[in-house]
Image 1: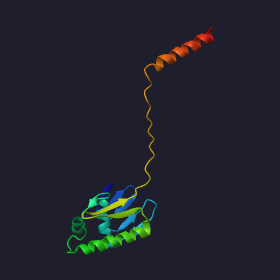
Image 2: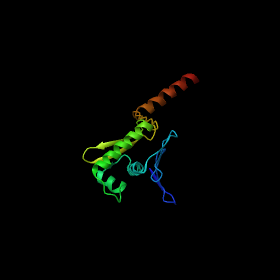
Image 3: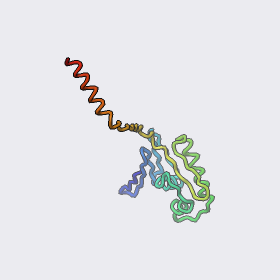
Image 4: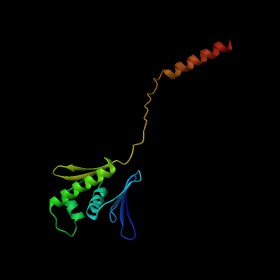
Length: 146
C-alpha cells in the first residue's frame, strides 16, 4: 500500500492497482473503471482504504470521517450501507466492507491474482547411490572398451 500526499493537499492511496483519492472521491479499479463518490462516502472510503484488510473501530471512523461534526452511530451505519451499495453496483465483489461484530469494519480489496509459485522438494539421494552409479558406469565403459 502506498499513500501519496500531493502538494495541493490531495491525498491518494494506492493498493495494488486500486487508487482511492480522499479529496475528489475517485475510486479507480484495475480494469480502468472509475467511480466518483460524494464527499461523506469519499472520506469514509479513504479512511477504510488506509487501513485496508485491518479492523477499524466505529469510534475511529466517526472521529476521522466526521472530524468537526457531532454524529451518532446511526450516521456511520447509514454511510457504510450507502458505500456498500454504491461499490457493489460498480465493482461487483472486488471491494467488500465486512462488519466485525462489536469491533468495527474491515475493507477487503481483491488486489489481483496471486502469482503462481511452484515449490519442489528433492530428497537427498541415499549415501550408497553415487558409488553404485559410478560402479555401473565403470562396468559399462569396461564392456564397451573390450
